[in-house]
Length: 211
Image 1 (tube, rainbow, N blue to C red):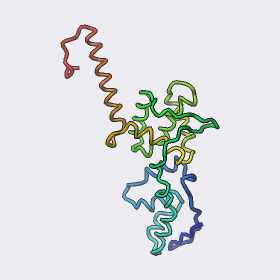
Image 2 (cartoon, helix red, strand yellow):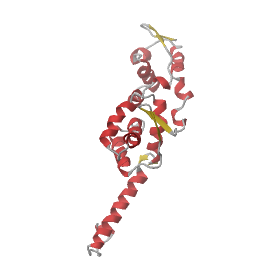
Image 3 (cartoon, rainbow, N blue to C red):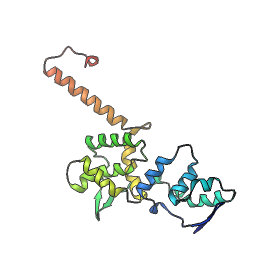
Image 4 (spheres, one colour):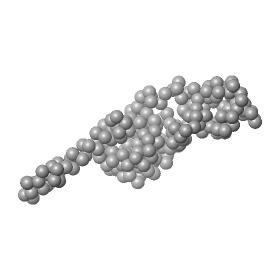
């Protein structure tokens, strides 16, 4: 237990690790960061249920060092350096992950979800669910089922889901633009198909700029 003493009260806090942080809690934390507040205090407040204002207004100069020990696990066990596993266990079943076989439908659904949620870090759960759904259901990709499966993914520890989810997300990102390469490829394929269709109909006089 770590003793946290503010101006108004003393709290005994049990240290946690990534094993204790759900994917849902992690993504909600990511949504709170960068909003003009102190990120360290926001993290402590979110993960440990401590009052942000009480911490910030404390006159105990040693408190900050004490609090930093509570979130040291974040740097000691860097999520971004965890290797992507070969398998994921879901509903007591192990599924081999297919990192190179996402369909166009899966990629486009992920693109929409990332745009809606705002950041890659807030999209870990849906990335895992999108990859897992066809494997678990033994069906082609279904976006509604992926959203249902995501509810279970949100309850998993973030250190189980992050290496998988972020691998899929960053695989299709270049220079911070999610799915840039895949998106341009799809647009080029669509353009090519359109040109072929027009040519097959005898409209050979159109240039690319006219289509």
